[in-house]
Image 1: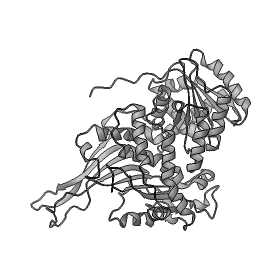
Image 2 (image 1 turned 90 degrees about the horizontal axis):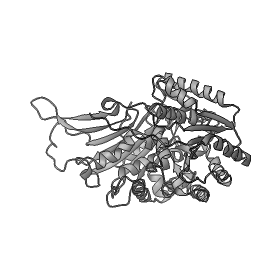
Image 3 (image 1 turned 120 degrees about the horizontal axis):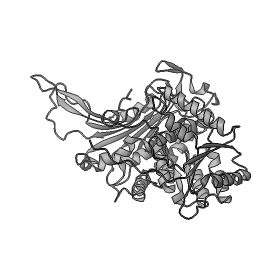
Image 4 (image 1 turned 60 degrees about the horizontal axis):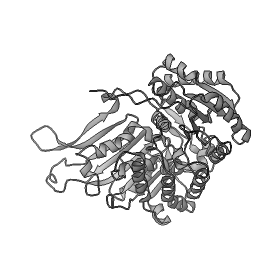
Length: 507
């Protein structure tokens, strides 16, 4: 197989990471930068300035990140994926790391940052500001950057801001945040990140759909019975209780990660792969999600909260016993919803979404279930078709695609058996380990907004989930489920009433 030419190096710039001492920066951003360094995709003029409240200096910052990177490489559960650290690639990156102790809410911080950037930029006055901070700081940081003149780019350079989720915690707060940062930045400068979109299988959805004649004609209500989107985690809330108990599974996962997967699956073919064309079609799909009444939302949803249990041999304490969680919490750690898309292509096709913590498998997938064959040729066969044909897009842990269909079992009688044709990226392509952030950081550096969310995408998504949040206010609490299970029984009942069932989690 001929190798594709390598992508060009990103232009030289300074990357300022607010929250550089936090878990996100250590576990995902710096490993992604290391992988980009190893792939030769960062220019010699690339520099990183870490900004955070904690004490430290350049040397301690570098040493701490180097040690942490080594520990990630040694852990089989890490998303980093590298078996060992390449000393040359790490040295190249470490030499470009620096650290500033700062208060995000102090104007003097930004004046000092401006001076540091002037010293660091040299001939490359472009800057990427990455907000790996708590959401309450998003608006303040952007406003103070603008006040200090740091969002205005010199001629031939760029100033961009990459913002993590969650972007708001309801429709009103999302609109307010969009207005707030929109007064300081042009939309072309704003990169609202969803790291799921950096996964290879997610980006391959459009190729699977639009690049294969065997699938493209079938991708509509005439041939597809239903769609399931699952994001299951084996970990509990761990040390995120203070945030998670305010947010819950729906706010944490559905209007961002799961809706972005839904948009990739359900969007119309764009006129081109230009960023604006792709993002416009994704926005139209999210806008077309039916807005339910509170009564409908209550009937079309299931909530759960995990109790103590065992996952992969590890004991998990009950959610209510986790640090910084209310002992009487009614926050959901599992949610399943049934959605409809009100457009021509998907009329009558239900979309079932589920996500949960402390489940029995770490599994993110999209299952496209096709309608059964329109005849009864096999109705008298003893072992007739027990399952419909489906196409499974496996996002993690083993990225790939599986097609499941019926075949004749060997022997004199006509009996049917379900078989699978599976494609796994790791088996077919020699790809480098990746966290998913590599693509999104690189795209931001080169100015490609295809995989980033627009302001209206954010608001359409919150508008679609608000009926569920409103309906739950006066309803009973979430149903208990044991850690290490498939989730609450109410989720099974949600599909059972439609004559369907969830696809088993992939272990």
